[in-house]
Length: 528
Image 1 (cartoon, rainbow, N blue to C red):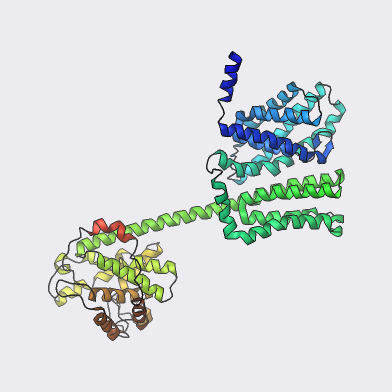
Image 2: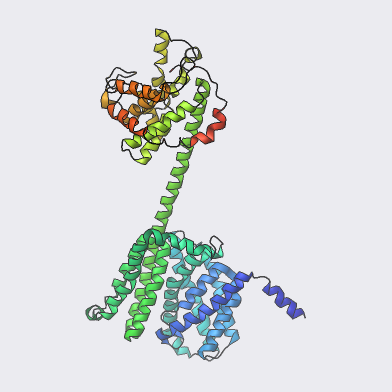
């Protein structure tokens, strides 16, 4: 009864998914051991020992929890291979493995996710270091048990070490990169098909070409007589390098596994034996390490680009929010309800689009137009809110607001604020050079300023004011056409006419976010 309770206690330490993965590991370990048999240089010592790569990856992912499954895999391999099953030797092998991998991994600071180039190199060091200790312990245990002759040790150990290193470089990174997200629950099995479908849909043709390049290259090297006779095995590097540079570490690990399997299959089919196998062993090790290094570097660059894009989007969102809140504050003080500013900004973006401006610039022009009257913050309330006509002196003060707005926005590193400075400074300039504050003419006026001038006047004419009712669209357009070539850029006026034939775009996204603020804006009588 106590034994049963102890067994139940041991089993309850594992989640059902972990037990299933443990069983899958044992099955895969046995299959890979069988696949390595054709490449044995000595009985039981393979030049490409892939089970070691699987063992190393599972240990890095699960630590001591993997001990029962590792031990079971080793015992079953011995049993199915016809070797005498020695549970003590098997246990010593697992203990030697356990006492080496944990301390060495911690000493190297190895991250199993392989996010850095140092982790890829440390994985190779770890694989060789653990294989060194694991091989020594196992081989000398076999010698002590009388199973292996002492004089065979010097010949067997180098083959053991390099064979394990090749297995680790081929298989361990693949398992870590592709199965670690499942272990960390960053990705579920249900989500895996959708995750894979995205790249296939976006780059299906390229991925197909990359997949076909692997068997094609191996076929050329092993089946075409001149290439095979010249031992041009290094040509197998080319598709792996291509995939690594295009697909990063996930693609590189998959390419290394597939390419190694194809090379192994070609060796088996062509009947090449130890002399070629030793060359190919070095080739596969070098190919794997090269592919992993290139893939990791490409993944790091992709991650940096993604981080820059995320930072850019966050910065852009901050600019948008600040501009929107400034706009709400200005409309609060100026007396607008906010409708004029946001309608005018939306119209600016639509006109820019009609003129053939790219989408990003259209968006920036729309945002910049929100601050076209920022300079009115420096105009006294007595002038800004005066209900009647302004005196000449008051007009002189009012005409300073473009300069004030330009000064407030000056020397910003942000493109949208730089554009807002242009709009604030030039939206009262005239095509014929009689505007203010700088007297610019024609194309001396920046495009954003010319667009803002037309959109500002059109929206002001078609909106109600305390001192007049809104003009009809036809009357407002007639006024703009009358000023075309004198006050306004004729091309911008034509673009406005074309825009008004279409449904107007939804106003800037800020509009809904700031609606609660704008609802409290006073409804005074701003001076235009």
